[in-house]
Every structure is written in structure tokens, then in C-alpha cells.
Image 1: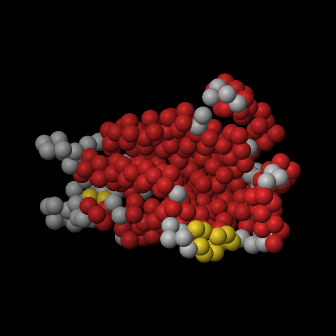
Image 2: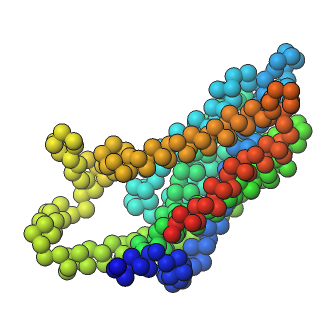
Image 3: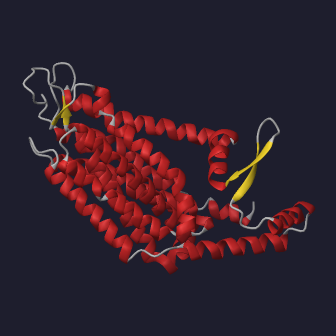
Length: 350
């Protein structure tokens, strides 16, 4: 068995190597862990509060039967904040890598936090459910940019041999915060005040993340450039095959064009920008990545079901003959779903 494979299968050696790799940038690495906890916390509080702040008006008195602040009779409309959030997050996820490579990780991270600041302000001032839905567009952009960049930065600090463990730590911190802060959100929400305390806390978390990203966070782009240059030097010095020479010639002819060729199943080839090339390749052409995309879609479907349909059912009805469940109990149900998902992320990182 090759030596590197033996190391990858030894958890103790993996952790030792990981600690050694992040040691030069350990404070920046753990700063990103803390930022991930902030991101998960504000996401949890925001989503939980929105999940219970609407209700039906079955008796026609103009107020939500469950005490919510907005009367929304349609279950689809009341859970549509997840749709606007998800679409905005998907778009930001698609472009955040390209933007981070072009402008730098720190600049884009700060921009993400700036986009998030209006979210609690809009919800606190909202007079209609439509304003809340628009706030979720900004929340989706903020989450897609900031959470993705914490992963990118942590991977940069850990190096190519420890990417999995870095991602596992990030996801564990974030999703565990999402799980735990459900309970915090339920404690913050009053009998008739669904927005006051929760979203002032969210505003504080947003400002905290913005200040830390602006004043303390450092960019890792130089580390990536050094790693890429070292990799290319190793490949060029060790590859003397004809294919290797062809690759070198092509790199010499077309350096840093930001474009690449993609081979379609029909045999036709065409040139695309790096961003669209990666999207098409991962979503439609590479079978392994397509299966990963489908698996991710199913996980997000289950999450949307838990945060949307299950939460609304528990908060509005709670089952035949039960009546609406207390918010603390609804939060505990979401905790039971989210916490295992968060904790197990660390193990998968090995």
C-alpha cells in the first residue's frame, strides 16, 4: 500500500498532519470557524422565527389563529421564504468562487456581510409578508457568499491534503449552530412578538461578522497562488510524456485565458468560460458529480420539508386533536433533525 494512502486511512495521523498544516495560520483558521458559527446561528434564528410568524385566520377576526404577526392562509405562500432564500443562495454559490478568485476572498466576504445587514432591518420594519420574502433574497446571497467563503478559506489554510477535514470542521460548526440556535430562537420569541428580540440578535450577529471580516480576516489568495505554482512546477518537472508536453504547449499558447474546452456526449467540443464550464460539467456530464448533485438536492429537500412543512404543521395544528405545539417543542423537533446532521459532518471529513 502506498504511504500516502496509509496516512489517509489513519485518523490520528490525519489529525496530526492537519494541525501541522494549519499551524502557521491557526488563528485565521479558527476565526473562520467562529464566523461559520455566527452564520449558522443567524440563519437558524431567522428561519425559525419566519416559520412561526405566519398563521391562518380561520375565525375571520383579522388576526392569525396561532398568534403570528402576518395572516397568510396559503401554506405555499407562508413557506415561500424558503424558495426565495434557496434561489438567491444557489445563484450566489454559482458565482462566489469566480468572484473570490478575481477580487480576493476578504473583499467578497465583506461584501457578503454587507448584503446581510439589511435582512433584520427589513423584517423588523416589514408591514407585509412580501417584504419578508424580499429580505430572504438578501439572506440567501449573504449565506451563499459568506458560508462558502469560510469553506474556501479553511481549505486554503489546511492545504490540498486536508481539504476533507477542513470542510468537515466547517460543516460541523455551522450545522451544529443551526441546530442549537433553534432553541435559542424559541426562547427569544414572545407570545405576540415574533420579530423584536430575535431580529435584534440577528442584526448584532450580522454586524459582528462584518466587523471581524473587515478588521481581522486576512485573505488567503497568496497561499493559493503559491500552492498552484508549486503544483505546476512539480507536474512539469515530473511529466515527460507526450501528453504532458502537449499540455505544456497548450498552456504556453493560451495562458490565463479564463476559458476552457468541454467535450459533449455527441463528440462536439466548444469553448466556455471557466464558471459555465464547471457548472455544465458538474451538473450534466460527469456521472459521479451528477449523482452528488442529486444527493445534495434530496438533502436540501428534506431540510426544506423540516423547516417548512413540518414547522408550519407543528406551529399551526400540531396534529389532530393536539392543537398548536409550543414553540419550544417545535424547536426541539428541529434540533433532533439538525444536530446529528451537524455532528456527523466531522467524521465524513476524514
